[in-house]
Length: 367
Image (cartoon, rainbow, N blue to C red):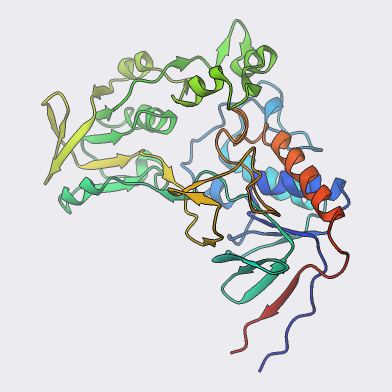
């Protein structure tokens, strides 16, 4: 029998050590709260490091900082994925944030005193919990992908790294969002590429009249348009392409196709009746939330989180980093701080009303 670990003495657990979780941690410390961040990966910034090699932020460095620490890159430059990962690692170190790595939370349920969180080898009990697992959780691939022949290499954009990692031959990218456009453009330099777009999205340049797009968006107030306003509802209904438009891809040789409707063998068929044989298919079809590990009634409805600016109807349970949690910037690196401050302030008010004492303990499973 293994002796249990000594109890932790904290006020709140943050699930997820990405940009949202670290922003929450910074604000929790300013509130004077005792907390612990549980990160599933073995290193901070893991999600960023595993994206494709050429990925760069579409926000310039001056708009990429978490609270308290500027992003270490010149203004007007667009950091790559590894720079973001290193920034998150250095951020946690700079403020000595208590992050436990390799602690994937597999279960969350309510208890009489708060919440119980389970990982592979430990159980945590806390009065309050902030779920900051981000929007990129489970890659989504349409079921019709099963109809493709085994000779066709298919992968989700989450698995894509570079053109050199793919076999030669005609390639079809499915998905008309920013990821689909960027990957199609990169691949077009080395192979014939078709891009299947189900819905046309508006496109905006990365720079306008000598200023970055986000200079205009922040000063016009568009980055902070409330989610429940008329304009907010219109903006969140459609993704906006930034920096890469249809004309640029056409000049690079990308052929546009409408919505994919069927596949058979090596052939993909589209809504206009056209078809294309492919050697490679890249599914840039987004992600789905994975909240099945949350066993707390009243939090999820049809798989979606029920909340008001991240505050659920379950006392002590919060979410952070959701797309359009309160504004357009809620899930973005340089803009998540506003929601983090709001949640941390609510956590502090709730903690002040609770009885003092030990609010978290961690024990190893008895083998």
